[in-house]
Image (cartoon, rainbow, N blue to C red; front, side, top):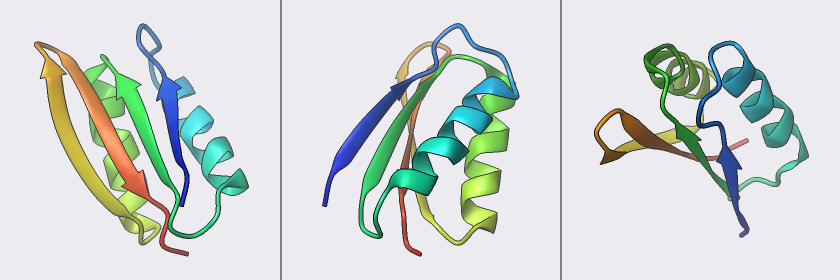
Length: 75
């Protein structure tokens, strides 16, 4: 299992979602990606997309207005 970080600070949707989707395509089942975001639109879109795709999702607020979306690839 590998863990990847994706720095999307300062980027507005849909860029963080597109970057997350592209990275997920290269990952193996069981790998984890930590997407760092500070845009509220991405805070909704990335977890919604990942859950709809069947992946495990966790969200942590690391600073005021900054989050880490942790996605485990399940398929």
